[in-house]
Image (tube, rainbow, N blue to C red):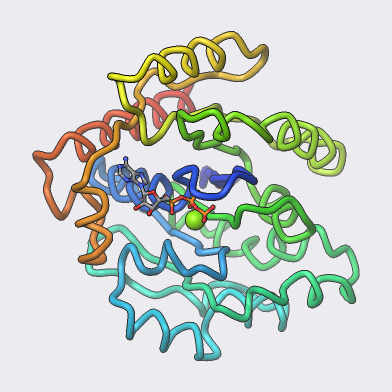
Length: 263
Ligand SMILES: Nc1ncnc2c1ncn2[C@@H]1O[C@H](COP(=O)(O)OP(=O)(O)OP(=O)(O)O)[C@@H](O)[C@H]1O
Ligand SMILES: [Mg+2]
């Protein structure tokens, strides 16, 4: 049986840190010797931009070799994998055409499971220890596909009033998904863009810590301009500036995630 673990990063709240966390946890896991495949499921192309420069990302988005095309053709994803500049990190890029993915899915049989089927062989091959899926800030048929293709869902939450708003909708949606994909587990919440000087941040942590049946990762990620600079350079922050605060925090969070899924 395959030991590859598929984790998606989901939250219907935009800007909660899904793409940043997916890109950086993925890279941190590779530094721990894990083989990682990143899959960009968002038309904003942010996960792809975390590893490749804009021109290359736009070329990939326009090509026949991106996630949108694979879903459209219902093809095995093996042929869509692109190596990154880093050992042990590969990526399947996205496309701006992802904006019409809901329409594509609508006409397909067993439409909730298209991504799971496209990923089946890559997962079973055991070539990767982790497959990390980045998702858009929506709750529709495509995010349902992403959740149905996953073993675990990790929820990045921004420590702000609106960051918490909408979590109830996400949990309700995940309950529905678990009815058709009962093996899906909620890995937990990771707090991002934290500002320890603000009382509101402390209150957010308390609120999240009190949620029943959802694990809260103890390592949170603080606001750090190195994140933005690393994204400007199309590099994970650990590669851009390994000594930065967020680099250390993402490494520690990835270690916590690794321990959690290895229990
Ligand atoms: N720790 C951090 N410090 C500073 N800026 C951050 C940090 N984490 C994320 N950001 C910035 O916040 C913004 C949103 O982050 P990100 O794109 O990862 O969120 P997202 O949930 O993927 O957004 P979307 O819902 O649009 O896909 C980005 O501009 C990113 O550069
Ligand atoms: Mg994103």
